[in-house]
Amino acid sequence: MTEKNAQSMSQQDCLVALMVAVSASDENIRTAELIKIQSAVNMLPVFADYDIDRMTRISNTVLDLFEQEDGLEALFGLIRDDLPERLYETAYALACDVAAADGKLAETELELLAEVRYELNIDRLHAAAIERGARARHMV
Image (cartoon, rainbow, N blue to C red; front, side, top):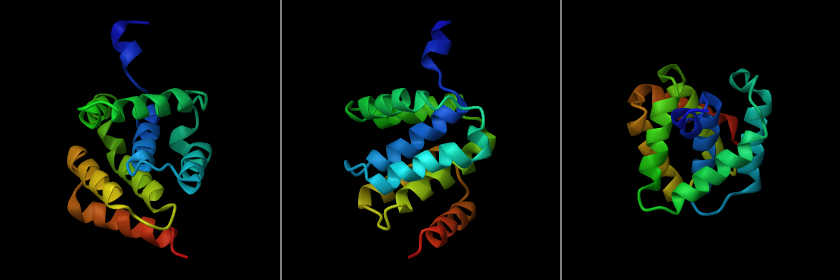
């Protein structure tokens, strides 16, 4: 494995990392959020060939980055390097679903979603539609 490959993540790793980041953003990873992540990985076509054993390593990487001063910036750098642009809206949709999974949005989750929109250059109208869909799916 080359140096680049040792540091890079698969496109699925990037999606998992972003979902974990949203869940951990309020410093309280909730069961509903973990179930949402697990469900996405188990059910969505983008994860069809994903090695589920990588989830623990990716989760630990995200949590380690969150302990560093510029960790969020580093995480977005990895995601921008390794996630194809065609999956940016998918990434944002998954992030919104995880944020909405427990029925409440903490200020830190909202701030992270805004950062995701900015970092992945999600069109505001598209973001609103994705957010509306997440809200509708998680309505009680």
